[in-house]
Each structure stands twice: as structure tokens, then as C-alpha cells.
Length: 286
Image (cartoon, rainbow, N blue to C red; front, side):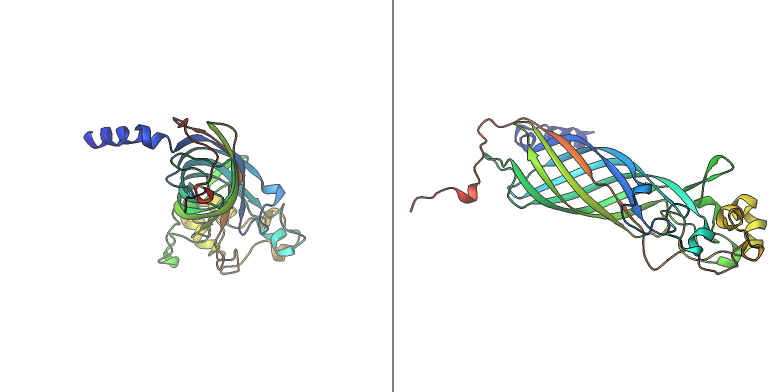
């Protein structure tokens, strides 16, 4: 309890608060993967929102922490581009994304110091995030969690060593943005950050179709149907199902997700002595 009290005291200190901003984030989400092979596909655009805390320790560098919620979707029916294989595969999903991130921002033109501020600057951002996802598919009018079903053979005896994928993962956000000061307290920033992940299962699609008999026996009819949905669109009985070890996804490329949007922040405890001068341009006596 003592350490928590000291931490709260530190964050509420006058010096620290003069460099801090709190705010909200709103934007769109999208993903790049097996069921949406084109980045920022309009058909897969969703909404996201979050809360943001920023700390500005120096003229060019800022720290941003955020908690963001959004969702991603993908569908062969919407993104097949006339490709027979995708039309026949007929897979789709949705997944929430809950992300906690910590990023550094490099402000090209500077942003804030002890007694000076800048009104506008472009910036680069990058950092680390931890996120939770849970891919689902619509089945008989209900949304069903896909990970427990082992749609690619995870957990089956003949797939030893192929464990279910983890629903909590790490990503690396990388992006660009521009921020503008709207007065003493308010700032607005627009950015586009790409999240590189280390999983290929945001959409529950990665490798090969499993053994149909084994998944039916051990996981049930629903698991079999959601593993291979070709029967829903097949007009040729010879293409009614995919065979074991036929390609289901592209395991060579990991999935990405994106949170481009607008952040509005409120600067705490403004120092009235701040001005618009860049200390790097101040005249000096010789």
C-alpha cells in the first residue's frame, strides 16, 4: 500500500503533471490475413475506441499508453476476388480486440519542454502491446467461439504437439501521425499504426484441413462444419469437402491488425510561462 501511495503522489506532483496529457481515442479497425488479403478492405472496416495517457519528458520524445477496444472481421464470401478456391473455402469470422499498449513518439519538430511548446508536429510511433482476441463464426444463427473447437486439428491425438493457439498475444505497433495544439490545454492527433503480430490465428485460419473422421468423433459435428464450410456452397459433389492436409490457410505470413484514428487529449496543470519558442532556435550571446 505504501508503494501505491508513493506512486500516486509521484503522478500527481506539479512537475510531472505539467508534462502529462489524458484523453480519448476513436477510429477504425481492419486486419490483414487469410480472410482479408488486402489491407484496409472497405468491407471489413469496423470501429474502435480507447483511453489514452501521454507523458512528454523532453522536446522531441513523448510516451503514450492506451487501452483500446475494437473488432475485426473477415470473409471469403466478401474477399474472394473471383478466386474459385476462396469461394469454395467459404470461411468467415469476427473477433474482438482488447489491447493495452505502450508506445514512444518521436516528434520531428518538437512538442513540449520545461517552458516552451510547439503547436504542430509530425511524429513517428512505435512500441509494444499486449492484446486479447477470440475468433468466432456464425453457425445456425449463433456466434460460436472457434478456438476451443480445434478447427485445424489442435488437440487431436494424431496432431501431437499442435496445441490450441493462445488468445492473448503480443504485437508491435508501428506508425506515423501528426498532432496539433488547440490551445493551452487541448491537443488533437491523427495517426495510423500497424500492429505486427506473432500469430496467424486472428481469423482461426492458418495451415491445413484436419482429419474429418477424427474431428467428428472427438469434437463433434459443429467443429467439423466450422472447420470445412465448403458444403454450404458446393454445387459439385466431388468438391463437397476438403481432404485431410489440403491447404486451409497461408501459415508463412502472420496476421496484422490496424487502429488508425483520432486522439484528443487534455494537458494537465499548464505552466503559464510556456511559449511557442523552440529552444534549438533561440539566439545566444557570443
